[in-house]
Length: 416
Image (tube, rainbow, N blue to C red; front, side, top):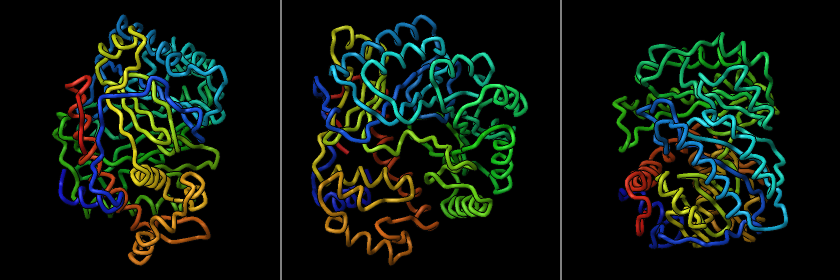
């Protein structure tokens, strides 16, 4: 990890102690004490493996996928030992390509509903090939209310760069017109080589034309452990492009939901990140609770073997200091472009102003945030620098951790 990230961590946590992830876990997870709890399920199977994608995934095998789902459901019951049902916000399925096990999505949802009351809907990620009347019907019948389609780009030149095949917008529109969902989100990648504002506008307007009411514009991140040879865009070009697309969306009257997501409908929302706490199920899934962060093993075989022994498939656990938890809270809450002082004070039972008043003052002076009542809201400049440092810390922290976990099922310890 670089000197800048170390110094930043030490300043914000007021501690020389690094983030230490240890090969340990609680047999009973204390999630009942957590407010604003969400759920996440990871399905790590794909028909083909995109070389730019950093997430835990393997080539689809029907027998292995079905065995995995059997033990995924068992993990749910191992974690959720309480007789009392816990109310949660939302449930999201990610991957991988969750629709490859579409016939079992309802079974997973029903297992979760034995223990949880889901109040804000169920979302699932889809490959464009999965957007068919048959698949959408099965998912809607299972209880899915939100879908997110990984388009990346409607333009052949960028699909070629990313090693993906052409997407047919009219074919997607045909299915989306027949089967309706509360939120239809489409994911795009920006900051690809020679990409322009016009390229991105074409993608956004095509998305809304064929049935989307929400989109995500994620930056291309060049992880060290992925085999992608796509050249990353220079910082200044990326800043200009992000600012231009943000201004365009604002002028069009689109609602900004998070740093990278916008909608043309105030009721449309799709974000598995902006939640105070969450439980993760499946290989590589993470869990964030009031005082700890844990991550499951990336190895599907070891994941299954652990659950066979009635043990949680946890690979590593981080026990937060109070300041570490505050930094984590602020980092991911800021993803929504806003931090509410009242919410922070309630969560930590202490004042945001007392803990980070100096940093917030500096941020206001530098033009990164503006204060409206109890809310600190990012400016365009602040949103870019959040993106810039999110990219920086992703490579400093996540890149290292995931790089190790891809090769070691249960490493002894990782210091970040």
